[in-house]
Amino acid sequence: MGGVTLDSGALIAFERGQRRIIAHLKETSLRGIALTVPTVVIAEVWRGRARSARLAALFEACTIEPLAESLARVAGEALGRVKGASLADAIVMASAAQRGDRVLTADPGDLLRLRTYFLNTRVVAI
Image (cartoon, rainbow, N blue to C red; front, side, top):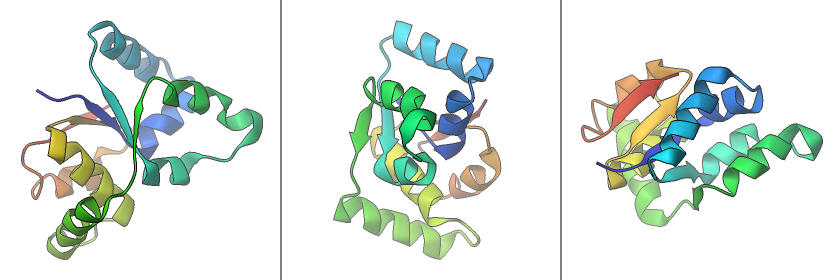
């Protein structure tokens, strides 16, 4: 099994100090499970200054994944097949799929639709 990929909803929940996400991330850390954050997710949630200080600390413990051309192509193909999917969600799922990761999210609806294309991922709602 792979690691855990965080989407925007998971990061927003963390930034707000929601207990469930904090507990989940602590457990992930204790088990030595890798955390990945695609750069598109950072763009969606980063607002700078003090508001993003918690996120900056979390990113120190994560692999930050840039959007490579190959990943962009896979995400684009998913967008063509899964109607109504967003670009950011498709990138998150493509990122997770290449490692067989679970995707941690506060908003599973759109990601679950994309899971029909990315069969080797699991969406975990927090």
